[in-house]
Length: 76
Image (tube, rainbow, N blue to C red; front, top):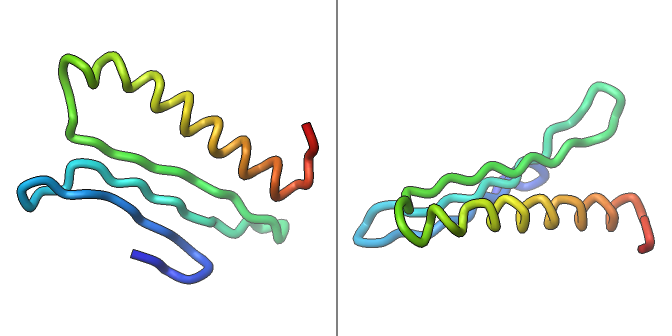
C-alpha cells in the first residue's frame, strides 16, 4: 500500500496469511518538520527467529539513521 506523502506499507504472505509487515509513516510536526516512524510486525517465532530478532532491530535502527543522515546532509 502506498499513501502519497504519508505512508508506505510492505509485507508478505504465506498460505494467505500475513507473516511480516513493515510500515514507514511520515508524521508532520507542529514546527514544520517531519518525523519518520518505522513499525514492523512478524508472526515468526521460536528457534531461529528468537536469535535473529535482535539483529533485525539493529538493522532497522541503522536504516533509520541512514535515512536521517541523507535527509540532513550529514557526511560520514
